[in-house]
Image 1 (cartoon, rainbow, N blue to C red):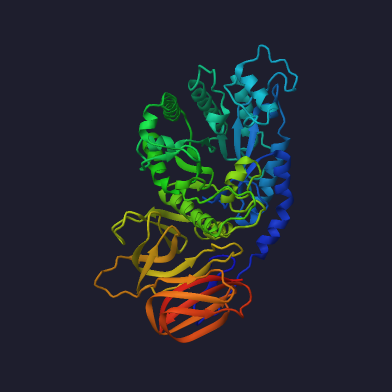
Image 2: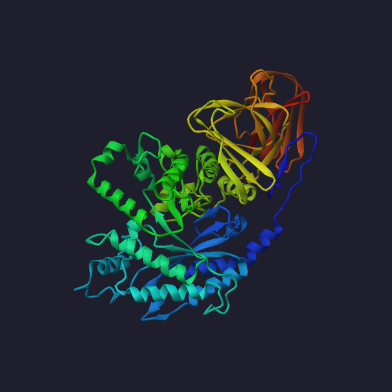
Length: 594
C-alpha cells in the first residue's frame, strides 16, 4: 500500500480509500506530552520515522501524523550543574516520554558555564570576554541565542557532569534513572560552532575547540561505548566544498542576494582563515557522524557527500546527517518569491515547494546521507517571515501539498535498503537529467527530474507512476498502473517523476507505446477545460474521476488534438482525467473545479 488516500486510476477499477484512524487517535493521545516537552523545556524538535532519514526539525502538533520519532533536547551545563549537584528532573521527564511514546531524544551538550551574575545590573568588571558575551546575549534580544559556550575552566567538573549524565541514561543497570525504558544513544557536542562558540578575542581558538571536542567525546564513550557522538550545526559547508571543487558550479550564494566565485574567496583573508580553521577542526577531532545544517540547493548533495568523505573519512565509517534543514530560499535554489507573511503562496511556489521535498530527500539519500531534516512549522520571527513559506505548513499553519508529499514519501521509502544514482547514458544521454533508484521493502522506486531544461526520456520495465499533490487543498497521492512490457516516453522537468518497477534499457529500433504530452488549461476552471494533445486522437476516450476515485464523467468517440470539455455541472473539488485510445492508455492530468 502507498499510504492514506490511495487512489488507483484505472478505468476498469474502483479504487479503495484507506484511512489512518489509529494514527489520529495516537496523535490525540500524545498531544499533551509533546506540548509539555516543547513549552516547558524549550527544545527544538524534528520528526523521524524509526531510524529512517525523514526528519523535520521544527516543533509541530502534526508530528505524530508525519511519523514523529525524535526531538533535539538542549542541555546547557549551567542549568544542570550547581557545584556538582545535578538536577536531572527535566531530563527524567524526557526519558519518561521516550519510554511511553518511543520518541527518541537527541541530546545536545553545550558547555555554557555558570556566570557570576545574570541580573541586568551586574557589575561585569574583571569578567572574561566570553562571560561578558554570554551576559550581553541574555539581556539583548537583538543578539543571537543567549547560549555561548567556551572551553571549561574546570575540566574535571565538566567531565564529571558528562559522565553522570551519560551513565544515568545508558541503560547498563548501574546508576541508571529508575524509570528508564530506552537508553539514550545519540549525543551532539555544541551547535553552530561559528555562532555559539566564543571565538572573538580568543587566541586559543581553534585548538581549544579541538581539545574540548576530544575530551568530551572520550568522556561520553567511556561512560557508554554504544553511544553515537556527533558534531553538528556546521554552516557554510557548501561554500567550503565549492571552493575546494567538490561542488561543481560557477558561483554559490553566501546570503539571499549575494553570489560569489572562487576568485573572490582566494583574496579574502577572513575566508581563508575560516577555511583553515574548519579543516583543522575536522582533521583533528574525534566524532562518529557528520551533521551539517542544510537549507536549499538539493543539487549539491552529491558534492557534499563526496567532499566530506574524501576530506575526513577515507575509511567510509562515519555517517552523513543533515538534521537541520529545509528551504530552498535562494534564487538559484529554485525559489520564486519566498517572502510572504500572509501564509498564502503563489501556485507556482506551492508546486515548487512540494517538488523540492522530493529532490531534497531523494537526492540526499541517493548521495549517501542517512538522516535529513526538514522544517515543518513556520516561525514568526524575521527568519520565519523570510523563509517560512518553504516549510511544510504555511504561516497560518495550513498543511501545504509539501506536507502530504513529505508524508507519502516517508511512508514509501523510509526503511529503504539501498539507494543510488542512475548513471547517465544507461537510459538517457543527457547530463541535465537526474535519476535515483531507491529500494524499499519489496518496492523499487525510480525518481527522475531535470533542473536545467525539458527533455524526453523513454523507459521500459515500469509498472506504476506515482502522482503527488501540488495544489493547495489537495492531500492525495494517486497511482497510474502501467504495462511493464511497454515502452513509454516521459517529459522531464523540475517536477520529479516517480515510478515503480525495474527499468531496462530500450532500443531505438523498438516501437514504443508513447506517454503523450498533454496540456490542460485553465486550471482551476469553473466551466470549460481545454486540452491540447501532442497527437490527433482517433476514437479516444476521456474519463474523469473525483478525488475518491469514482467515475463522474465519460466521453467517448473523440477525434482531434484540441478539445473542449464542459465541467460546469461538476461540484467544486479535485478531479483526475484519464485519456485513452482503444486499449492504449495515453495520459493523465489532475485539475481543480472551482
